Length: 327
Image (cartoon, rainbow, N blue to C red; front, side, top):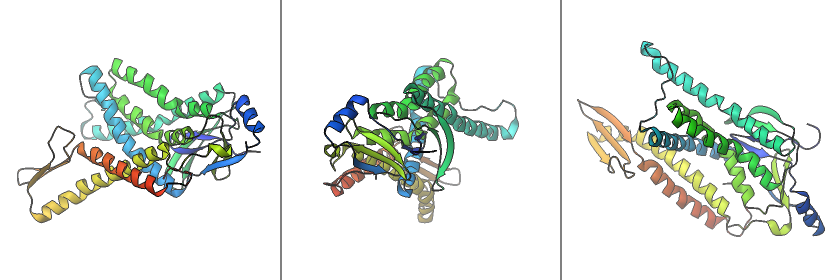
């Protein structure tokens, strides 16, 4: 587009925006003669792309569990996600899987349309597109050349997550559509970049501007607006990234490496933690009568603890320097 690069905001892409605060805030900043100080440049680097992917995967698992629990709380029954018609023999599971993939993918459309509605609410003209960041993270986005205040852009970022959750959960429970757990979880997991950008913006005063440039997002304001190195938003993001990486690593280690190691050691049965509680970490049985493997809710609990430790370590290391990106 001519002029400034467009805004990009979608379920899984770093958001770029050429944004101004409201007229009063701009006037105040100009009066102080310090309105053009670059506070931070946020770019969707390969490292951040990998972080967003890992956090999104963990978010999908956690969101699925949360929405499934809400469904059971409201209906008294666990959600049923079988979408294929009954009586289709052995390929019923394949049809169900295909239908769920389609449902999870199709949620991108209302997600981006809601971004677009929020953009129009503040006077912007909207365009849409798709892409892949570093050949790792596919994304869709709503785009505009309109300028936003910080709080306006927070609304643009979070509208799809809030609206689809507030509407989807009552519909899911009232109509007993257990399959809605999947698109609702996909929408929540896909909002990871929106949440990242919201957390980042909340670390700055409401009068700051967010400007799009060729390589990412630039936050502009007054010199005194620079966040301290010990930023609460950075701690939150580091905790999420650490918890996601630790949980995925534990799942792979216990689900893949655990059975191989235990079988090599001749262990026939082992249970780590108490089944049915959050302390349940792992269960394995390998006997002539039974071969089974189970991973319990203790995995995300341990992951959360490791994520907090990671966040504290990162906070200690970054003391005294500005926070420019989440990780």
